[in-house]
Image (cartoon, rainbow, N blue to C red; front, top):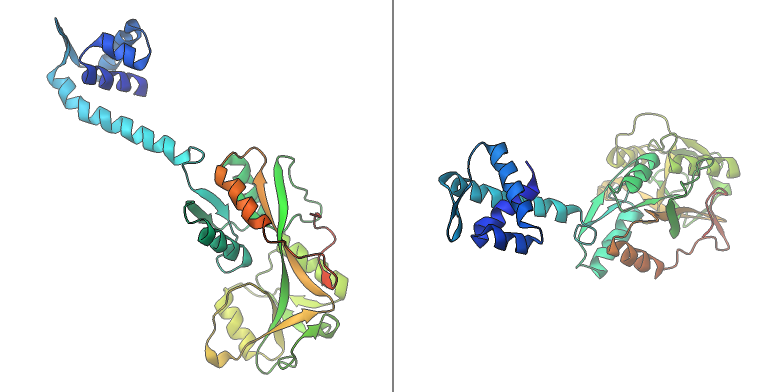
Length: 311
């Protein structure tokens, strides 16, 4: 059904005249008549009766009018839902417990007037496709994985370099250390079942192993953080890496330790990605908010992989 014809029908019903409706719609009276005739053909009924005073709704026209108004209202809501500046800013944070989620919570506290849709996409290819199609406005990622440069229409900026920490159970050999150097981790088994091949964090840990000779095991299925914490708490031979700002809760009896890693401190490079032609006004506000806090990476005593794009 032609929405312009429906809009014209509703305008005539409101004005009571074809000529007045034509003026209101900024079209000719002939165009108004053609639209109504086409709509009547589609519906198989007459909608108006012409009178000396103008146009009156037939019984069928009276029955159709409330539905026509609802159709127009639904169409307006559909357009508003995707109109830049009137729809929520959609941002991919990968997971709900990580640093990116924390950055967006901080943004929301600072700008509660901005509507947000927060989504979680795993693969970087999925995130980039979503940015290019407009499904999401921005995504937090490590930029970029070796041999996988960003498309030319995707912009990025480093927003946070997050230190890694070692997470151990109470019986681990390093459990009582106030901090550990990277060299002291050589020979210890670091279990990280969440490392997925082909992801940017998979490339990050591959580079970390190659640089420092660490032993990182990704064996076994990934049952989530609760099972990971249970296993680390109960197995003295295993530890894991945890990003500094990852939010975790575990039972008091687990006795887990979060231990800073130093000399150098491995930092995970978070970047914000967006399409260069995205006009959403809240995207500029988000970028300005993130730029107000320097990421703090590439400083003396830190390590980031060599394939990360410089700021």
